[in-house]
Length: 179
Image (cartoon, rainbow, N blue to C red; front, top):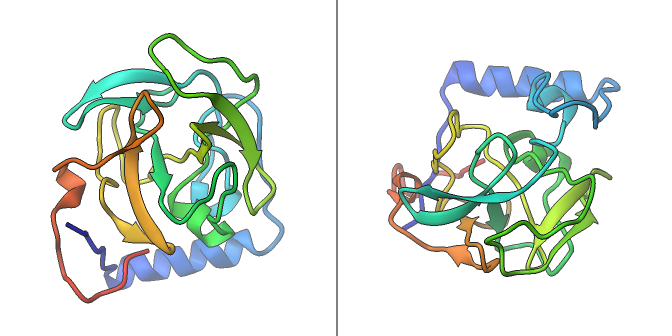
């Protein structure tokens, strides 16, 4: 099932203000954990460090260094991100400093560059992202969401889309555009 998100007036104004600010010379940051600042104003990678496997309501999925669920976008191509700067506001890329394959991950781990020029991790060729509405480790609110030309799915240790009945897969407000 596809879930669509609608924004209230406050949310729409906040996003518009953030996009306006980000177009006024914001720069990407690669230092520290990557969690500083608002993703809406800096396009900061979601995190740096090691991708690993964790158990969520969808089963075993990949997570970033902070334990946040990692997603793929079906519109992407092998080692090619189609996520625009606006997309990266909601779906920050998972940064990678050094390419290693952690225990439990059976797909090839690599890196590519986002459309905004950020270096990001790949698994099984899929560029990896987190979702800004996942507030805690193990959240899977982006699961099954249709936006930015494709559908977002959590990533299995084998590098495949996890198409499960997670909380994000419920349909709401059909017919309205997502992010």
